[in-house]
Image 1 (tube, rainbow, N blue to C red):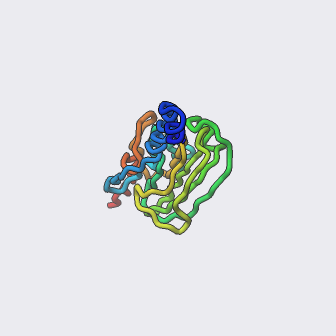
Image 2 (image 1 turned 180 degrees about the vertical axis):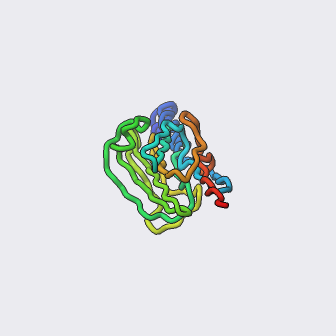
Image 3 (image 1 turned 60 degrees about the vertical axis):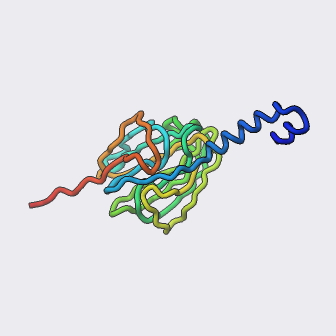
Length: 191
């Protein structure tokens, strides 16, 4: 459209379309990432940790908000086998709000990782209206491997058990596949 307007009307009429095209290229970027070594859990998305909540003695949840300027490719926080992927339709509330975790449209993965079950969700937001998933139940994933994307502003939640020691704090900026969210606790040696 920008070329048509620039060529057949006035050159400056195409500028908004060129800017929009440049933003879309920027938005859908997918940089290479190298996951850290060790028995760790990494961030599944770029963004800001907006909440860390102890849901029960057996579950902690980390919520990451992705604004429109973050990379929106999502990655597996742990290596393991995908036991289940459950899609749930829902609302499109602002993804930085707490109720987005319970009410918004989402795609939830359950991964078995070395005797631990890690659950993580791709959650649509106010602008995000499309969740893309590259995997299916039964697939194996490596830590930091691409699992899908959420188009435009969104949220990712990660739920894990007490066998993991938290490594991030609320308000911290994180990078998908790189920033360590938690480290697996080593079992105490019995003498």
